[in-house]
Image (cartoon, rainbow, N blue to C red):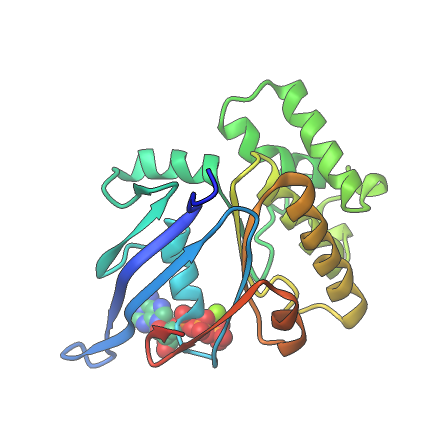
Length: 227
Ligand SMILES: Nc1ncnc2c1ncn2[C@@H]1O[C@H](COP(=O)(O)OP(=O)(O)OP(=O)(O)O)[C@@H](O)[C@H]1O
Ligand SMILES: [Mg+2]
């Protein structure tokens, strides 16, 4: 399906109550976006412009004030929270700026988790998780806990975890934000290789012009609008 859209949003708005409680902060004011299969898109914008807010709404983690999000042309916010969580676990891989790994579990267990939640057989989940960790250069770190890994390694585990269930899209919120140049390069190279290998689309929030320049398209979030 050449014209298939992996993710789409139309006229998204998001308001937050202002501190005093009597006004509203209009953070998103009508955002439209379409992501095609295996497309890599960067979103840039100043701090506080609403990038994380937008990414959370695109990933089904936060409800818009108005407008809608579609995964494979299906509106997601019409579903009840349980069903939405299930759909998210099947369709979307989320990479947070600060990895959010579970501290009491090993790298392997962290990466297996999304599959176990989906009731995939333990041995299959283990196979997929070891494959991904291997692919991310972490074959020697399967049984390390997050506290025993470097920042770059933790972020690679977090990216492996995002891929466990073969999502059609990865949403990454500044995945290299706290990494040095070498680790940033490694992560970026992996992302671009994975697009080929896993046929996955990627939305990447970044502050860095050089990273954005490598993507298929770059959008700027400014005054609540994506251009
Ligand atoms: N739950 C909330 N309640 C009230 N205001 C919020 C809430 N979440 C975000 N905001 C406000 O919305 C604005 C956008 O926040 P957001 O985190 O999306 O920005 P950002 O572009 O990701 O910034 P950064 O580059 O610093 O990560 C900020 O001004 C923030 O204070
Ligand atoms: Mg942010």
